[in-house]
Image 1: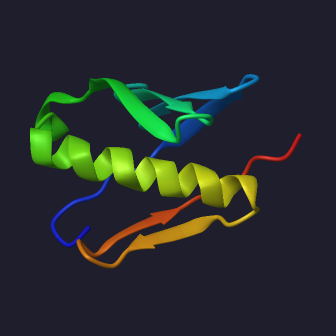
Image 2: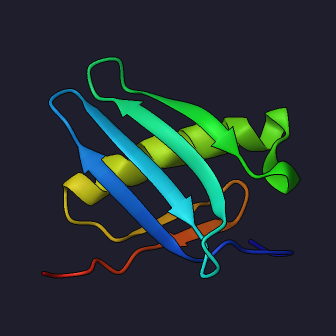
Image 3: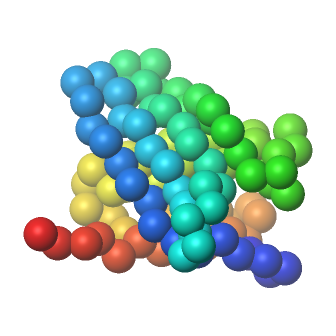
Length: 95
């Protein structure tokens, strides 16, 4: 983002019809926890770090996470929100 960024690890747990995820930084502080329902194509944010816990940021996060997860399933590791100039870049960890 132009004025700030969040970096760290995104951990995803794929279940039958849902994906549970958590993003935490290098210090172990959780930035956000969410669930993505594949059938309904909706993201639910369970907790968001205080500095990003605003209704307008949560709305953008929900939309972006939905697109990011769809892209990750197809093998895309980069997503760009052109409207708000937010770039998401993921580097998968291989076993």
